[in-house]
Length: 151
Image (cartoon, rainbow, N blue to C red; front, side):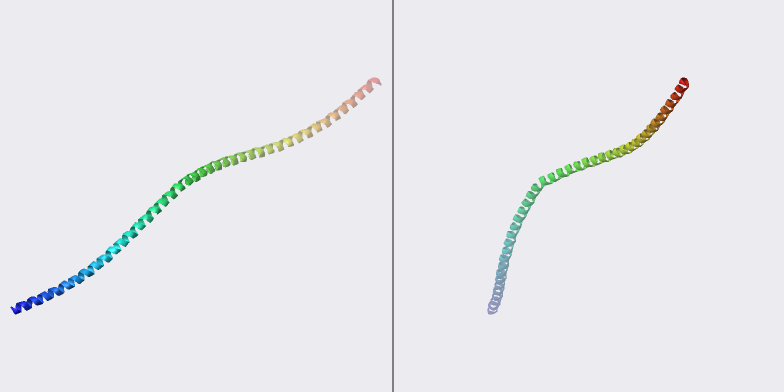
């Protein structure tokens, strides 16, 4: 019986040692669980902060988009106006080019007409000289004929 008692004592001592080891392991695990819970809590807080920052950033982005949209429409309207003005200027430039061509053609025509007038004036002058000479000849002939009849 002593042996059994001794064996039971040894077994109880062993179990007591195992229980102490398990209690120590349990305490360590409880401590680590507390640390893990703290980390999870910290991560949760960081996650909430980041979500709030993200929500503010999204809100700010949406506000900027909302503010930029009318400006973009205004820029598009200005671009359309500029394209219309460019088209009008191009049409005006084409009209100016046509007017310059017409002016140049008229200048050539005017130069040709001036040359024609000069030739006509020269021809008229020549005709006047010829006419004056013919009148003088006719007058001379009249005098001759009158002198033959009177004399």
